[in-house]
Amino acid sequence: MSIARLSDLAVKQACPRLVVKVGSSLLVDGDGVRREWLEALVAEIAEAKARGQDVIVVSSGAIALGAARLGLDKGGRGSLADAQASAAVGQIALSGLWAELLDGHGISAAQILLTLDDLEGRRRYLNATATLTRLLDAGTVPVINENDSVATHEIRFGDNDRLAARVAQAARASAVLLLSDVDGLYDRDPSTAGASLIREVHGVTDEVHAMATGGSASGMGSGGMTSKLQAAEIAELAGISLAIVNGTHMRPIGRALASETGTLFHPRRKAAARKAWLGGRLRLKGRLVVDKGAAAALGEGSSLLSKGVIGVEGGFLRGDAIAIVDTQGAVIAHGLSEYDAGECEKLQGHHSNEHEAILGYASRSAVVHRDQLVLK
Image: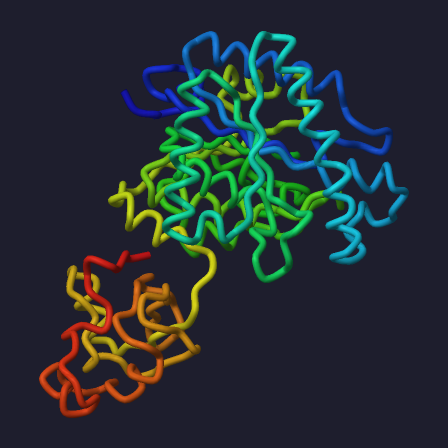
């Protein structure tokens, strides 16, 4: 049984493992933690557990909570130092709150703090997978947040929407549920007259991206509809459904699923685990620009050969993740380069049988092998 509609997220057979993302503006308001709302949400999580579903929570709120306790303005986001200090103080309160409320239902909470590197590096990604699997097998609810107390701008997810999608991929989840401050994706700014809710999306296209508006209306969070669509792209490659529903109401999950109100993104395909990890990467070390012939060949499942490369950007090394783009700059694929950037520059435009003469040593025939490449 697969997920065909929103209400299937509450069916164990269709959704045995669910990731629920909770944003800062839902957890915290001007008066502090919205405790009554959170208690109701935790009750819904307990009900899902009672149905036999595994649940993982990706929870924002540490920076907002810490900023309130430290008396910092701009919600603790006035500077990187303010955000890190706020996170350090707020994370204790946040994890304690989740642990307390889940314990009231006889459920143990487990805290995991992640940085971008933890899910971008293959070995650390597999370690995270193993930890999540063991915690879920033990019956806990892992509560995950970005490790904002140490993360810098260069090694941050920057929003928990994309983090939730990557966690779902690592945990082999069936679906991601993003609790938002709107009912879902609208065909235009939802504050505009005549805006219509898009209830189902089969593949995030340029047209779908054009519907989104960036930014967080509350001023507390770091995401927006754009980040949610990026999360949907990560999920759909891994064969994971993703839903956006309104989280502002009491018992928001039950309310949205019962009324089928929200946007459900259906996965387009399920890539192999390694390729899904590669396709979901957020940080790439460089780009290779390819001609029309190479772009067409990649679409048919071929490796990238040096003959089709017409441009090299970045200082990547062999084995680094890079983007492959067409002449208009549109991303065609992600892949692991078989050569350093300098070698690619020497080889571009040349046939594979010329590699040894150019480099002075026997080399690989492909610049990016098809086994280390995933189309976007």
